[in-house]
Image (cartoon, rainbow, N blue to C red; front, side, top):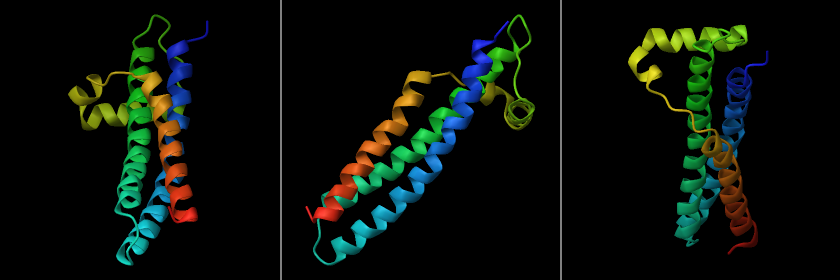
Length: 134
């Protein structure tokens, strides 16, 4: 029997790492926007750059929390869950550090999937503004 929660937990555990390159690209564009703002460039672009960086962090966080919540739900399921060893170890470590906080996590798979797309759109707009000088 396939455990949908375990599969979704693995998916979100992988998807969270999309936030890392988004954070790097967002930070580079933010520094670029700041350097232009010092020379009279648009502060709107700087603020959008900050938003793009924040969205990349939110993307990582939402997918991380969703992965953990689904993994915990999978472990408590009728078939005992079929998590990968790595994800099962990560859940055990999180439970050891902050059991009540980890158990209180709520899975938000739709939000977790949307946040990387929003971050990418915002960063694309910032890149367009920087590249065209808007």
